[in-house]
Image 1: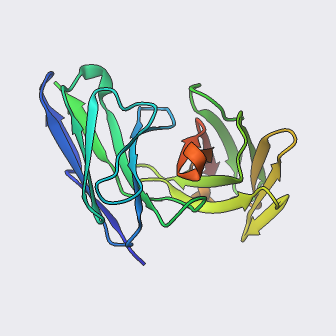
Image 2: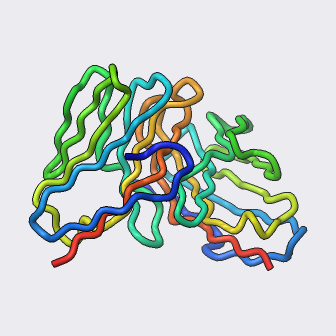
Length: 112
Length: 111
């Protein structure tokens, strides 16, 4: 088995601030993902990465940057936090095409 | 049923009852994923049904897939209180490298 760890669990920032969320997985999966989940809504894809140093944009990439420093870690940066993007950010990894995704517990972002 | 950006649907049932939730999707997919999400946690994969399967079972769960109508369903037999969760369907995107998630169905099972 494996686990996905997301840090921090809660992140509070000021409007306009640059904020970074981190994700680590020990499944040895190639592909990793960042999703945003707004309250009462489904998951929307922000970025994904199919291998180290690869980045692919999802539907919600504007306002975000991502970095895949190594196979096991994937970071997401909110470039200028806005109040309307308060949400839970979920990281996931997958062993391959058409396979299930394994999710971390999420980081809840609050913007003051 | 699930699709798009609508608010979550909600189903409330009693313990022991059966429940079915539906998912419609717009683009071709080779696989439909079903996830459950417990409060305060990330989604967890519960069943995955591929385009060459019409039905798949896992314990008290049963998923169906109708590729001609681009729809899938998830049924829970004899629901228990611990089945209370939000259930999402998801389909392929970006050549199978990513998923498109439905809006989710909240299932509440009371004793």
